[in-house]
View (spheres, rainbow, N blue to C red):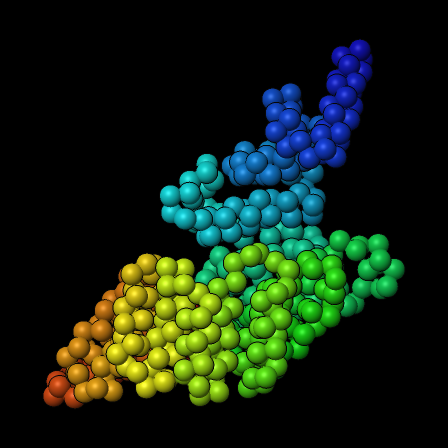
Length: 409
């Protein structure tokens, strides 16, 4: 009896210490409490262990955090623990997706283990609480970003999260004000996925609702909200609205790097048919050494639209130098420029490089390059090879065609 009383006092003392450390966000000290947890957890110890696992997650110690949470799950399998386990894997998978190769190793499991872990625990979380807005939103982000633009499934998840919030009573919304952040992000991410899926009307509705809903709370950075609205208006042909949104985004709150916005403004001028004006947006505002491959590619598009193929080819060659993701897009443009000049051999070479890069980098075919290669081969009198390319093109799924620009972005 005395031993039991002493143990209860220990857990109460550690629980109070953990609460204090949580309030101060002292993740290092809170994570260190793991050493003071017993081998066998009961309900009271598991409550403390939940907080310790959270701190381990904040320190990006994915394996230890997940192992401790699973011990807590074995004591009592609750929705919150399943959701926490899903989040640990989700957060690590996103970091791994976005990390530079040399920064990726941080003691976390590999991509496949993270994917399997997330799938398992998000399934448990949604089984226990099907209407969980946070979990459904994270599922959408996982599909859209970790799983490389699975936007149809992602959009369904984002719309589900938004719908769940709309069905809540006013009292529930007031009590769960923390959910507004996830709804704002679901509106933004849903608009982005709808745009990728070539559903501009839905993208417009969600994007504008995100701006209204998020208001001054800015759970989504204003620069990104406005930029997405500009892209949506560009897609719907509302070019004046697109330019206005993008100009406003230049001065909006958010990360200081804005060069990519000049590429979007150039895109508005390209849609108007003014290649020279498009080129000026980039040349006047972004120094050559600061231009990303995507900006160089857009500048080449502008020069080509202005009728200067030589400058276009020079810009596209610059785009190739530091590009790790979109060389197939640039090689395809180069191939198309050579086709227009009747340089069939050079066109064939460029299209083959585009196809090779796409297969090596993304394990799939690049339909526009196959189309160009088929024509280059026909023009060179190599009909049998052109037929083989046409057969290969027929195997490319329609959903994959035209998606490359969005994937690289």
